[in-house]
Image (tube, rainbow, N blue to C red; front, side, top):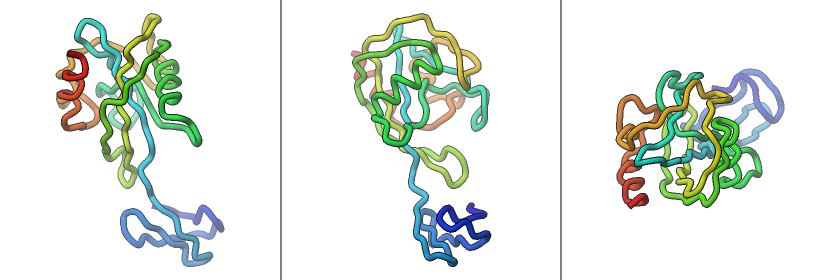
Length: 163
């Protein structure tokens, strides 16, 4: 996974101890392949959710929620607002955390996904950034093979939250 040590820069010295722990045989630096923090935002209109069609790999062409990675030092709620703005042009408020789960984003890279519902939003959605298209889909899309990531139980939690 690593061709160079991130600490000393030596080539071919990093050895995996397991799927999470790595050690450089040159400088003895220990580091970890921890999950990356990510956010996904549920925006609801008439019992449908706003989905983006992924414009890039991984999972290009599959449906996904607006969202993305949390930047270094960024509050997850601020990351959610930023990602929605970047990908849809919408402004969201009153975010409620409804689900936390994990999935493999790429081989050897996992994410911890914090899924939030935007209780209020305004603007007209327009696809931008890495989103090829935005469409309103039934909530059942979350459990479909057309959806990019498996989040078991998310659909039921969203349905309960929206009652």
